[in-house]
Image (cartoon, rainbow, N blue to C red; front, side, top):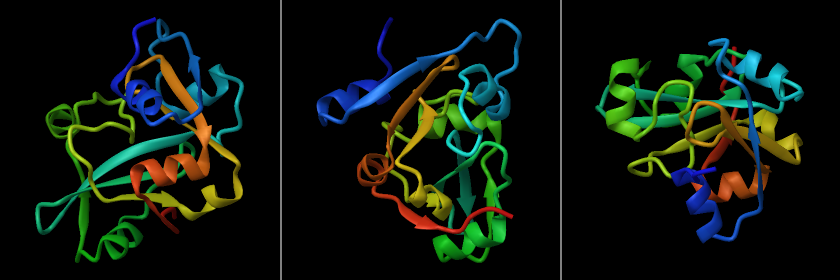
Length: 156
């Protein structure tokens, strides 16, 4: 299988990870469906969300797939008056990834990144590998260090 940019970066940084693949033929690529397909608890599978602040800066948020991002908490984390979700049509141009395959690792540029504080109690997290049909499981602290992320309460 061809490696994604996220996997290549993890290899380069010598970060241990496990690649997990899942079937996409049924079109169910939302996070909760992916968690069920790979047999993992939805609390350990995190989705990568990208938002834009009033200052036109981009921010990355990682939250459990079954949860919803609280935009007020997200804005406070970024020290912005407000943040809005990035339009799907802009995602590829900003991050280099498509919806359903957006990894927090190896985006086109490094953006300020925030991981929901509940992740701190988990030894590992599962995030997109950068392609629909592929996930990565890695140690929570490795993900935090690699993305230079802050842990903060982000969900409703």
